[in-house]
Image (cartoon, rainbow over all chains, first blue to last red; front, side, top):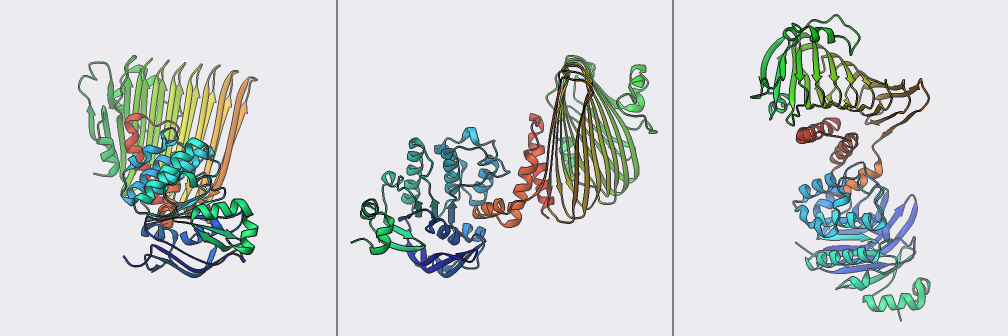
Length: 238
Length: 343
């Protein structure tokens, strides 16, 4: 293994001819938890989806995973390298959750009992994500992400639309991921998840596709609360 | 031994295997004959007058000989392990006529498989099923055909008073041409659930289901799932007709087109001859969603694997009731279908 787990160098992402992410650089190493904060539409989700290699995201700049260039690799090839994306709102699938979980566990050689903490029993024989509540969908999607045994877990708003009880479950799972050595890149709109995380390496503020501030989570969150995203975008953290 | 023959062989109560016109195996678990259970060639069974009288009462009469199986379950017998029948055509044409009678209050699971190999060019199968009062039947038909075979399959079922039928038709390899027809008549308080999963390769197939809710309190649900691969044409007319009040029926047909040169025609029809019937239908044809494919690719599956999973899911969700003893076999069959569908 060489280099940092994930290195993003001067990355810009275009979606349907529109530049959504501009000149972003970021590095996430093993066991680190990086939080991306930003207003709606600032490019947080786009950045994660571009790193995953989803179709429709045109990337310029360098994306390196364990020193290897990701450009040109399809999403499943990136997933097999150890990159996992927890989708923000997975659309209903015409596949039973139990079957999906079984296939992922077979693919990555992980035991299904990692799902136990998520209390998904009542959902397993249903079509995945069809009619799930916000909390159920987040827990199921996070559970599937963990089942991939990722080296890098990219979590897109694991805390939005989630009740307090589910938030604790989600927080515990993220802590275990990081403590197990995975790098975590977490997008949050509200920051609600942060108080449940035992370790946050750094927080970054992204506004209109650019990282406008980075620092330790407490300072960055405080600055966001005090000044708002727009002021930070103009002047950074003093 | 083929996959289907192995499936038939696994843990059956009774087994009947016919290749062309030859009965290859005929087994009955110990003690069943003493309890009045009958499994024998139809040719022998018609020596009983009551059997002779049943012929062609659940289906329109055809000019077909007496090759085929007769199964009789006496009243009050509940068999959990399946009765398996298997018909293989490997040379020319095969015409079979089967009759199954489930006595009052009895419960039975049947796995019936039909397949062709080698020079088998025509299979014509006619099956008549009679469920007496309060009887319960899970009837699973699995077809797997060679490309050079033409198939005619007709099934007629009379669901007696308070009886219940769970009919599952699965075709994992379609033939050159197929005309499949299921006619179900439901009597007072009886219920029928007819599910079909059809994977269509190149060729032309007609799958027709006609359910008649003959008497008060009868109910039926017909669920059809068609996966159409390249060069396939599938016509799927389904009719529920209510002839009595206080009856319920629902038709659901869904088609999944894997290729732009495939054709699916779904035609659900509801007919109510008396007031007081509640009949509904839903139909939809679509293709595999790009978003679902992309999602599954982020979970580590190649595009082909993702498509295969989605096909399997589409089919599996069409099965509302799978008889417990056949769950493992049906799961393997769904895996095979998903694999065949996506190359």
